[in-house]
Length: 341
Image (cartoon, rainbow, N blue to C red; front, side, top):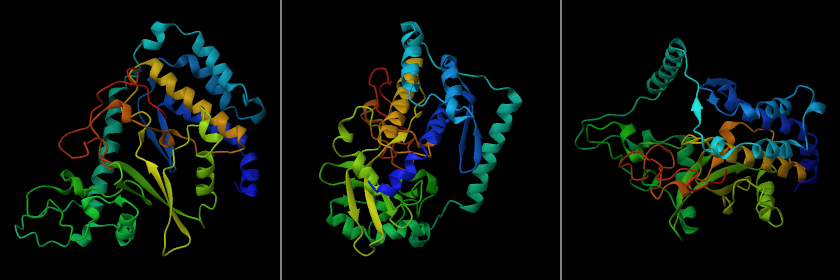
């Protein structure tokens, strides 16, 4: 690990403690703060017993935060809970009707605004003579230009990115949003692919060294002994690192396909506790390795959902099956098949 980066990270461990606690508090308060925007949703009920610990973790005065004792306090609190409490269902606070109307209005205004800015292509031209090039974002074209190189390394892109792609909704009365190949990546700089050696769907993340000089190096370190064998290590697994041949500044990290930590929602208090425990464990693990995350919030806590269903989900439209033949639904609960966050 880069020494100068490590020193900088070490100076921000207290900040990471605050962010970890704030992440848990967001679930209590029903708020998610990302990119400067506040998204309000229903508060989770039944977890009030953790509030004293969480409140201490987000104290304004750093010296008052439980830097090294948060995990022990957490385990003490959880150890006092009855089996019935752990098996009780997680509930959400019932919103006031006017508040629900407000949330629904804001939600649909955002949706309508997006559709106006990016209208779905709908055509009844049975010849299918539309311009497929217009359907692709510039970010996607970067990946398409490197498709042969990725294929030579054993990674196959979706049909949307193959030569001669014709949008499946062209020449029909279908909307773009109903087609499997109608979806661009959900985030810039990432794209899904299939690893040909075993059929695993992976996520590829483009990392410019000039912008994130220590990201790849740090991820490699966390996926190497002895850190890799530490049970508290919940950092994202790293499958491979690819150096882009025509740009020395850019590397690609090959990562697993993950879901948001609360999708599907927690079923029981015990399932929520299992998630919180892993978050606290990982913060402690990072601190012991003199690493400060500095961006812990609910949108950055992901889950390996593979134990929950034998039916794969679509990498971009994750509420759909990968083949787009229906909605994706879990076959098991986290209680039946625990997951890793």
